[in-house]
Amino acid sequence: MHKQTLKLVYADISSWIISGSLFSVLFIFMLYAREFLFFEPFFTFHLPMDWILSFVLIIIVSGLIALVTGLAVFQMRTIKANSRKAGTGVVGSIIGVGAGVCTSCGQIGFTIISTFGIAGATSLSFLTAYEIPIRLIAIAILSGTYFAMIKGITKGCKVNLNTVDENN
Image (cartoon, one colour):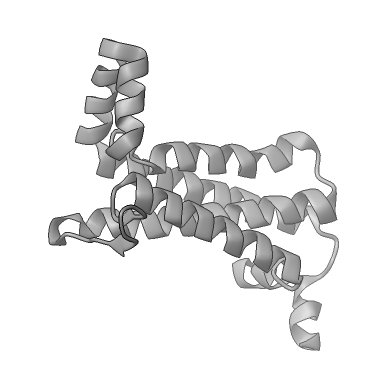
């Protein structure tokens, strides 16, 4: 079911472009926010050995967000799903981005602390301490959203996916 649905969704080049560009933008943003990627004074990438798990989780979150968003766009365009059904992918992606980015890391954290004071510092200390579990929760939410989107596309699509496989 999943393989056939993904073949159907990614048969169009626009789905590849949407997913690929979204993955690239989110991946670069998350690397920059987590201070793995630096643009000034030189463009450089730095990955300490104890942050490899965080780097892998960034890749997974970026990939799942791109995949779920591609499925949501396909569902909105092709199946003409109502806004409630298609909104599942969008909401899952937003939650995944929010949980996947370490806002306490780097320049973003200083901005939040200076804006919100004690409340900002307290929330950022929570995010720093639980960064890995929050990303794992984001992966779980995005995985659930992925399965819900696949189920919605399969139910909403009137095409027999087995015949699509036989023709290729």
